[in-house]
Length: 301
Image (tube, rainbow, N blue to C red; front, side, top):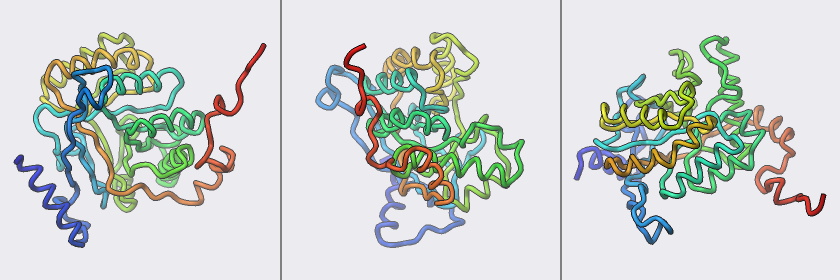
């Protein structure tokens, strides 16, 4: 058995035995569970899907960071493994297209929605959750937190976390990505007190600069070839990415890469001072609300 798996399973067993996580023990940040690759039986219409090779559960106590661009303590990926991540959604047209491409390959991803976008399009964000993907948060308005005061930055973080919870009608994962990947030691420490894990990246697609689908694919594949594995940063807000994804997933499969889905041990905890105003803004019935098209439809015009 792989060494990382042995260590992670040992951690899980300790947890089951009631051993508390030590705040200052970095070895106790991860628990890893095996998951079967999707087969024809579980992926109708695709006899050889990309699927999910492994599911990784993260205990976010103390705010661990992931992604070699900024954090090197927790390298949980094996050679050839990939975590697909998407920022800045949910967005009409683009996010549903991304979900369709992922579903066609029976694979999963990690989404970091912007709070405002979640409030504008809660029905799309619920589609992300219903498809079994993991959802974190990406601030309220995607402002560069390094340019704000400490209090302003914390409000951007917390309002974003609450917006995603309100839009979903349930708490999301305690995972966070900084806009433009810009952070300060103070904000890292704050997220540590909130037990929110931080995601940077190993492979930045730069799809926000590249506006041709084939170039997005080439960017990701060339960087993965160089790195051998990685957390891949893309944007479901970007239309070229939604167009590129079906072929990108095919190429990942053809080149032997395996997808790892990231999940959280516990959901994020939000603050009522941010939840309540957003609940009122969205109408107050978030847990059981339905997309407007399922409530009101035009039958003649």
